[in-house]
Image (cartoon, rainbow, N blue to C red; front, side):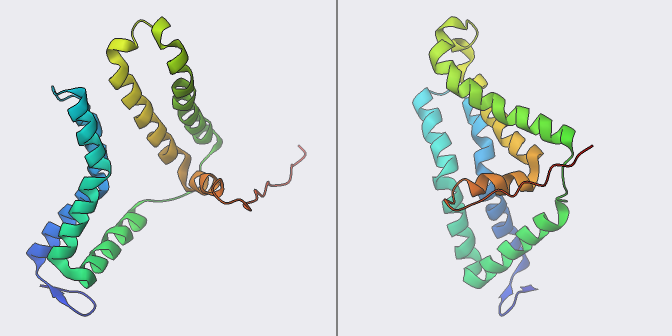
Length: 172
């Protein structure tokens, strides 16, 4: 039995709910595996959509049912505390920033250009799903490479009054 703030949760229930919670966070990561399945494109799209929209919510509801509201809040605090403790956020250097920006821009440019020029690229049509999935993975990886400060900059795009504070130019 694990004792949370006000309730006791059996260890087996806590472990099972933890697995469900982590699967809910990682369910979208299974989409590339779905693309490899020998099923119709409609089935792939349906399963992929469920992995993004339906499955995470369903798994979270199951975890709440298993643990109750207070147990689930305790579980969330444990998981996010573990993530925060083990992921070291530090300022990124200029090389990592440049690599991250290149990784960020390439999928955006390809997504913009491919609808116009895909007929002229012979290897694109037979490999369309893999190329598009690779672009999505590269885009997500770029956000990880660019780090937390970049996330804050992106978040600022959604606030009308957000201002950017640039450091003063240093004369060298």
